[in-house]
Length: 411
Image (cartoon, rainbow, N blue to C red; front, side, top):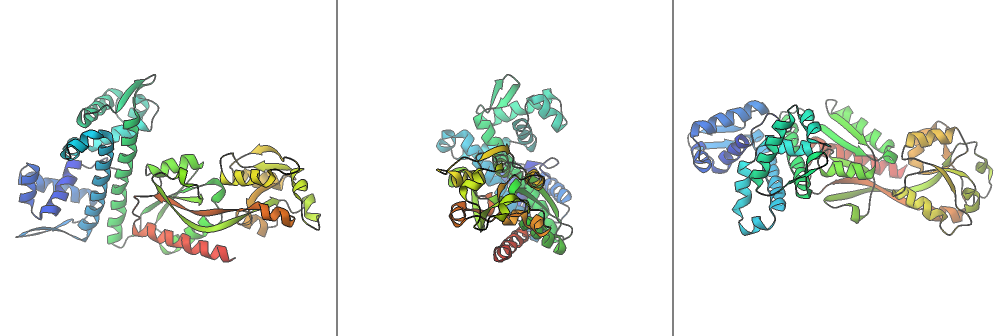
């Protein structure tokens, strides 16, 4: 549920009833009739499928489920207000009530239109994805711009597109709508149904026993949980994390300069190793392969800009020779296959080849002490949005990740 069949004004009516404790007082605050508030509340309860309010002679109070929804709606409202505050800039500083006035005019339909356009290459593509016509989408976008009172679009070669203000607004709005998805999952948890979805972004070279073991343990206890694993480059996955397309990112942690709006949690340090097939010629070196030996080999290297590529380049920096990296890939599957079928080497970690080493398909090349000291380590951890509040199921998964990581570190 992402607001497709919800009415933002109806949700605000529910929030106002919770705040005032009365349908009549909420109606006065919203400048609508009391029957209108009742209809709004009935619609919200019907859409979420739970009772949200206990009604008494003296007023109304949220049920346990209502408290869960209210907390998520407040977070959603805070993020929408933050987004509009950034879009309005100095105007919102001069007139503090401007944000709330603007929020009252904006609908889910307008928010979805902005998000669709920001994620598409043209208004035609955005309309097709949303099941509407370009003309209808164009009208909705102009309604939103008029409500915001500031330019959030620009006309380019492909037609209307969000400007920098519009792109930031779309990103924050998309994160805000994830609170509704979280609310749906948490309302099921109130009923004892652990059926929520966890969206995990996983870096290509981080899909080791860590994630597999943690997921197996989670699903053994909660078989109805839904897991979605997304892979890709750090640049892509961190952007998806920022806009709420994923909940957490697992893999090698990045520097602070790459973490705007994100926070990290280290799990363990993962030493690098030189990996090849068991019959590789360097396996026979009694004192371990020297830096010169390694420089004379063919390599499968990871993409530039990744921590492991930086470690690979640092290994041979100021060395006797430069290694031959005829293949660059972020695919661990391809890297493994190439090494098993040739004498090419790669810099990985022992944990990344745990299964292949156990089956005798790959192994770590013995290296000289001087090489081992230069190999270095990477820190594996979790990256999350600074504002993310995990559901109970998501918190349980995080606990499984932490427990699995501590056990892996002792193996």
